[in-house]
Length: 239
Image 1 (cartoon, rainbow, N blue to C red):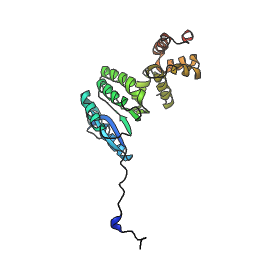
Image 2: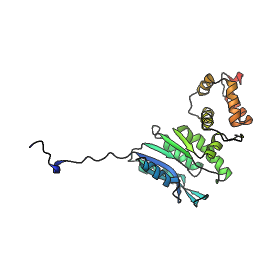
Image 3: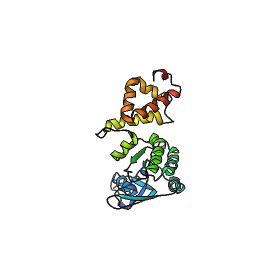
Image 4: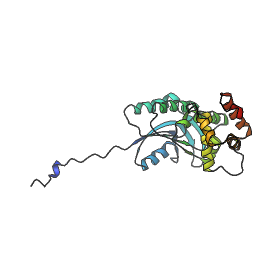
């Protein structure tokens, strides 16, 4: 009977390979965050994690005590070796250890501009103040412009996006989103030349100045607008 199928002749179809997500993050022995947390989260979403270790974090279950960043060249080698024969669906960038590693990771990301990036800012209150400033500046300049999504610890994001925030209440998600757009306009080298003008077309300059002062503080806002004027804006006289 031709309608009867011989079980031995049926070839089972292999399930499609899961999407691969490369994670740049620290090794966290608690398993609560860092690379271990990325593996658990990404796997729970049905994807496969390609974990690249950027730092060794020393901590207990309550707090972080220290970290030992991996050399930037070794971070890059981990990533580029596996990327030779794996198709990537997305990036996840967590804690990168230091500014040198931020630069190394950003260079890799730039080679794959069509792969979406999720950036995460963990709590970094335990990092030395000078090191933290260098790290934040590098992250802002090199990682943030490429990010499709930015998430993280609320205090870290406040310090990152609104360093001069002095209101007693914490900033809302909407205020952080506005601050992110403002940071992009004044800091992104790859922004269109008319980016600030398109902002102005939707928001009067007086209101934009008030918004900047509220987020950044009067001194930082004045520096930002002065820099904008020095770049030869046709609206410089209005500033």
